[in-house]
Length: 126
Image (cartoon, rainbow, N blue to C red; front, top):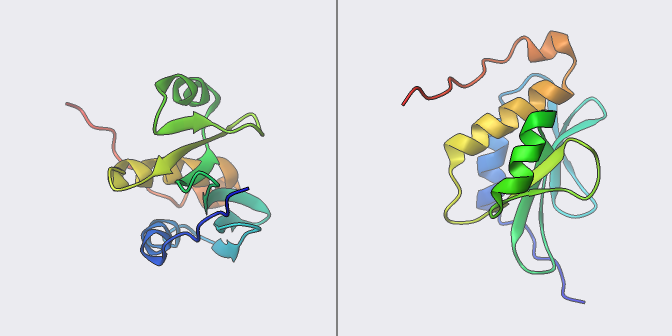
């Protein structure tokens, strides 16, 4: 079995910059990779796979889960949890989109009182 690569510090730093802006968001070393949580609820988990690709999993609204499942690469539905989806992180990752996805994940997982403190990214009107 191939070993999982360590998540590059530059990638963790970019994610940390996004997630540390959320109230009471804590970073932990996970069984593999790094996770961020609010209370006991995981917001996001980044890790290297045995295929040497880097993934992040996070929470999404039920209607978005179906969309992610059908979009294909770089998105996927995780094999656990009804609202857990993810994406491959690589040189083509759109970090503005990542910020929106992680903001949504935080607001899903956080208590309503904390989620209300978060400014949601504006949806483009193109």
